[in-house]
Length: 220
Image (cartoon, rainbow, N blue to C red; front, side, top):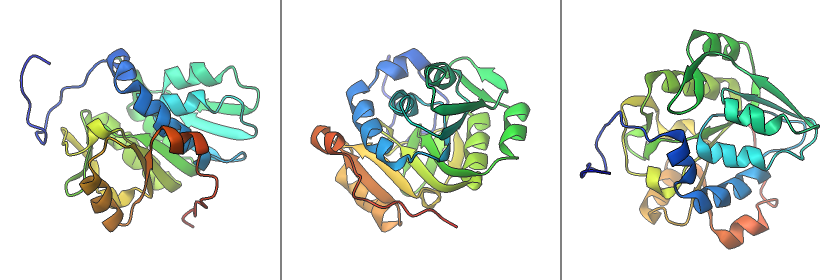
């Protein structure tokens, strides 16, 4: 926060996990309440280790017959209290700034699984450039998980739009569903929809009502 940084500049800077957890916390909770509706009992899902996805994990504790694969030690600790959720951790090298497991061990574990849904956080997203992150190892994990999942769901608050970071993850067309908050510029929402992404904009009222009426079609 000590100087100006171009909104679209590439950078390897990444705030600490605790700072990210506090940042835009209400928007993240609203996004998590909407995203929860896409998770069905009986699903096998991947929860990526972002702070927005962690907010979703908190809401899944009382689910039944749910299998969660994750590379996040914080999500493992949160879900260990749940009797109805089976939790599998990838293992791997710990990225201490993001509390995130990556590397060869994590990749080996992910190469052998198939998922109903992958639920992924987003460090930076631009409708034209695509999705990017600060860490190359994190980008590799995200690409592997995306290939293993029938449906790919991205969670991104308004601060992540119009940005580019060091490591390219993939084009926005790799995303099936994106949930964001009402602070996101409508032009980004429309550009993503034009690219074929289902975009859900969460605000307090919508998040409380949920999205049960929507049918999520999985890719075969």
